[in-house]
Image (cartoon, rainbow, N blue to C red; front, side):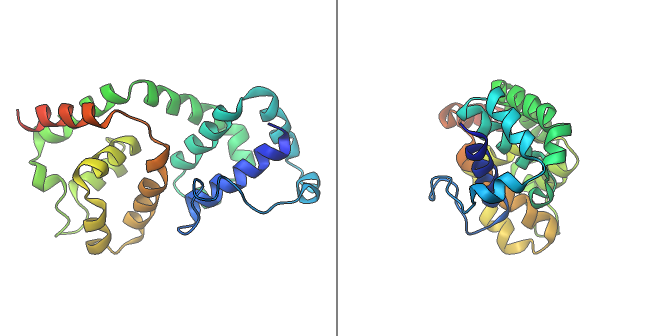
Length: 196
């Protein structure tokens, strides 16, 4: 990938994680940008360095890992990627490699102290699930997997009208297509934990 190609990926993925209407996959990562605007950027060196360091797949993973780590992906700027990007990417890679273990550990902790219906109950404000995520006890990957299985997101969207949930909901929705995991295995694992 050329530095300009990486710049396009950055713009497309940033738009994917911040714009409800833009879908990175639907538009094949295309976005408007000109080589002239790229050449005027003072942070061009970052894209040049990245083009020498990462392959095509790793470039996408690098940006995804940083956008899902950010509290507000729309505020990410290149300086943050220079300072914290590698760390975020390494932590994300570790989570991908131990996804089943992470899901098992977090689910055992969550469901040993709470009933299934209580975890997803949002009738009295923020549910346990959201509080645990905001407290750092659950990963975004676990939330995505739970949404695939329990489909709680639509209910939360309808009943939780606050900016905290809206931000998390968008992050779950936008991250979902990037998360590759064996859902059959995840369901089996959760069934054994919840039915204990």
